[in-house]
Amino acid sequence: MSHLSFNHGKRLVRPFYQLVALQQEKIKRDRYLRDKLLKEKRSEQMRSDKRASLLNKAMQPNRNGTASQKHVRQKRSVSGMYSLFRPLSAAFGATMERASSWEGPRRSAAELDFPALKPKLELTMNLVGAGVRSFINDQRPFTLQLDLEDGGRFLLQTTSGTECNKWLQGIKKVAETSALRRLTYLGRNAVPAYNEGGDSNAGPKDPNGIFGQNILTVLQRESPTGDYTPGAIPRVVGMCLAEINKRGLQEPGLHRVAGSKSLCNQLRAEFNSGLTPDLTIDGKYPDIHVVGDCLRQWLRELPESIFTNHLYASFLEVIKIPDYDERKTQLRGLIWQLPQPNFDILRRLLEHLDLVVDNEEHNHMTPDSLAICFNVTLCKPPTLASFDNMQHTLSLVKHCILHVSHMVG
Image (cartoon, rainbow, N blue to C red; front, side, top):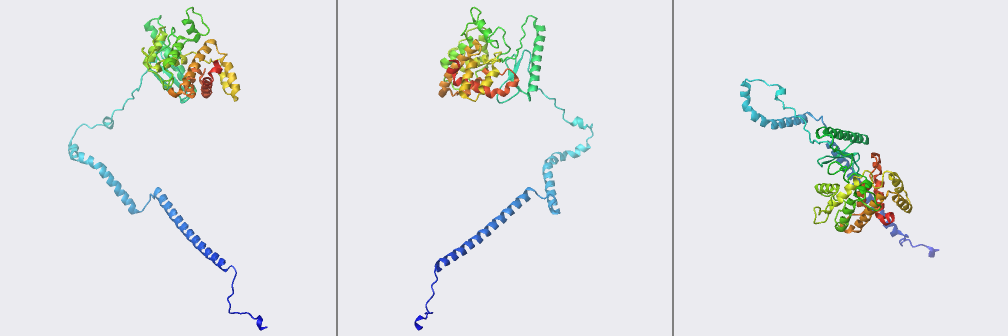
């Protein structure tokens, strides 16, 4: 059995010994790194809490404090009072002794006080013959536009629709009453000079002029026979559009930039007087913006908008149709239902705006910009309660500009 004995002097080899040893070393390193990171995290948390505590303490100081702190604060406040009043004491200290020995009439506190300042009026306006109307815009609701006889124009904003109506009726009543009262001095044959609410840039409306009058009335006045001729448009519209198409299509800001107010009033007066103004660049109105402003004034002052009060609600219903093709078809049908004078003016105006869009590269006027400029001009709401439909009328005008050939072709 001796040949079966084991040799105990030989070293026993363990399988995976080195791999296990490496894994144990890794576990020790990981544990050490974890403890280190936790310690740093706790230190950082303590510093953050301390910083937050100091900030809270600084934001909410203790007003009670100790007796020494109160003494220091009181000393500082007294020092501040001394530094403030020292110049006064230095100035009056030398005269105090003389003032105490001076015997004169004593004055009361009311006599020594400053007299009360009376409020001064910032602006005084003469409402005789003034015109007032609702000013429709997208930025400021419940706004009134006041036009005076001397050409002044003011915008007045109220807080509600009820208050806006009260101001509108009140100003109208004052303007009419004062204008009629003035007739006692001018004579009963004088024409009252107040406006019935039209938009005037040069004073009250001229009953014999063309601004603020019905389209058919203007066409009959301008006709040689006194009758309306189908296809005819007012002279102011034809002349202004022709001149703008001739030399103003590439003017930057066309129909957005306003012209000179004095020149617009002068051009308006010439049209109202039946004259033929020289609109060429060599004439009295070289600025094309004056011509465009005069055209927009005439459209804006119409007693009824181009789309008419009768079809206003129908246009709003059609523009809300979700289907694009159906909306375009029904909108064309409504446009062709307009009175013939309105349709002729709208067709000439849309053809002109189509030319303006073609020159967008030069004049920077997009269909959206033109729709904003002509929104109220073409779609004036019949009542103040229609202010909420401004977005729909804006879409209506833009739709007409984008599809001129389909709408009026």
